[in-house]
Figure: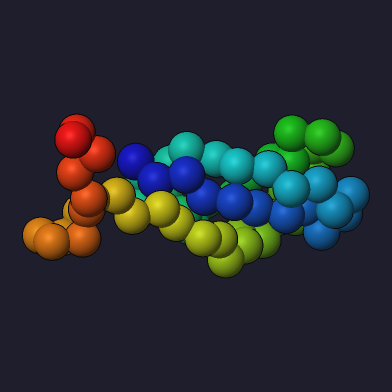
Length: 60
């Protein structure tokens, strides 16, 4: 499950929610002020892995 970032429009608190992809349309409560006026933010994501030939062998 991905972690989505939200920002409360009332108190301007940023918070994260671990939720299923199909649950993103559900109304969320701000954990700080309790209002249901939050918008999902665009956030960066991490990609892990290597490609052949891009890593160095440090065992010499």
